[in-house]
Image 1 (spheres, protein in one colour):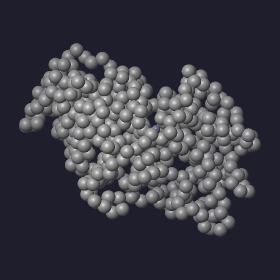
Image 2 (image 1 turned 90 degrees about the horizontal axis):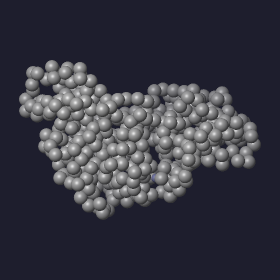
Image 3 (image 1 turned 90 degrees about the vertical axis):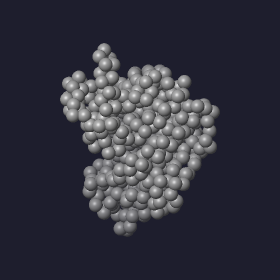
Image 4 (image 1 turned 30 degrees about the vertical axis):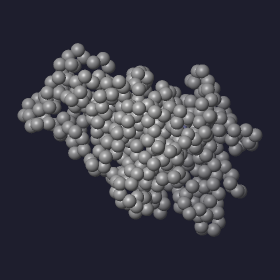
Length: 271
Length: 190
Ligand SMILES: [Zn+2]
């Protein structure tokens, strides 16, 4: 008997949702997703082009209820970062047993992490690398490393992007960024792995697969992945000096944040 | 937004429709979708995302990490070289002067609403000679400004805005060497 709260029902999120809903242990799902289904989604998603214009939450809900009519599905058609939506998002997080993050924007991942730590909920995250060359699945425990710790560790120790650095010979030229879309197969492999570890964790709260993050190489890429289908397991520790979850950030901020902030800003405006 | 009373019935019809779609395409689908649209069930809510100055996490970050770091930097420093912190809309701007060797430069480091996830941006206000590692508007190229974790060197779990000030100091020290010798001393902008 578990309720999960998931953010994101894109091409990967929908796979995770579908697989988790097939686990009898999952009795309730709250889905946070603001987007409306678009015709171009059909290439990597579950629904046909004709579903364009319908909210993804609504499509997902009907999909899940088709094989799990007993499932309690709650939908929040809101942006995770919307200030107005925070009370209902926090309520959903507080009443869940585990969080599932299936969004690919950094701001949203950090915010999700802050919510999960605030309510001390375990959570999992799946990430598909650009071009679908591989992907990560991460497990976060309330007392373990936060997303900031993990991102920092991986930034320092794993290189998975060999794209060209900015063109310094043309300062002021366009700053371009190429994100190569991943294939549906790559997305599904990583999303399935994400669902697998999440389901194991739901069955067994003491679940320890021997890693906190796993990187699965799906394609051979020179200087990045020398072998196909090779997993790299990481047991990432919490950073004591982490600016999100470490000692400094734990120091109790003033009771009234707004007053304290206004005072501090006033002080530093005249430094 | 409270769900409407007829939602359940509505949902049932969507499900029936989807089940049908999985088998064969229905010609009634167009009508059905326009019905959905008219019911106002097609759009999620969107508003300005929360940021540094209007989210709990942002305010705590400022109060427990960034402001103490600026205050430590300013402590005992000649007033002329202290960091001033100015609010500009939803951004915060650090205004300061640096003197890496013999020249004084005026700078500003901007913390956008999406800071600290998105790196700060530093501009030199003092006119510079055109040189490598300088972007439009005399913005320093200090971190690869990609939006994903993999292509961006900024580390919000370890760096504060004062780190950006120190990085600007190193950059200017390189600039002065480049000015004298024509060689940028570090292989990569840092
Ligand atoms: Zn941390």
